[in-house]
Image 1: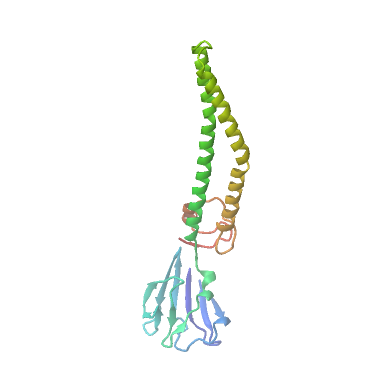
Image 2 (image 1 turned 120 degrees about the vertical axis):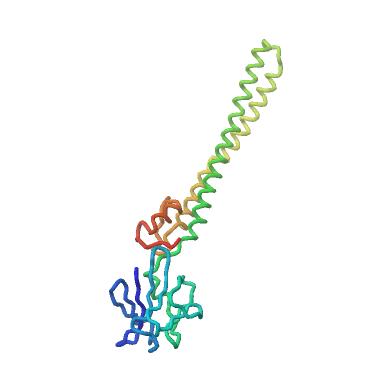
Length: 224
């Protein structure tokens, strides 16, 4: 995408020529006469934005420094002409890619929490299986001792105690894991959204989003 920025001679407003189509911004007020009709060019290529001065007689400043060509971001202060007319980034925002780098932390946290919950459930199930192992050992001791080995009674008793303990814990925790997953998914759906349209992006990883380069719904270009 290419945006030519200059001064409209009739309205004295800011003239934006977006991919060959002229648009005059009335919200910009009176633009200084030192701003040329075709003053500078803003080129958007994927997530990269470059500002280029279009004439040696034009003055274009980025963060107080005169430039001929420079990569810029929305945090940079751009001024045009000798009178240093300030360029309002909000006038260009709809044409620029949106920054989604903050979504990486959201995705990484979601993946980590999902993994933690899965591991916790697996460990608990592994511990529950220990009661069956203890019972099998007690049976083996009973058979080997011909009923004379009293250790199997102790193991039976231990297996019963552990089984009861795990039953009580499982009963108490039976709703906790689904609730945690539900809350995790709800928070993820609130946070993992396109900054432009606010639509939940879905379960596409951040790497996939960065590779696709745009929102699957509003088609807004992403800056990563």
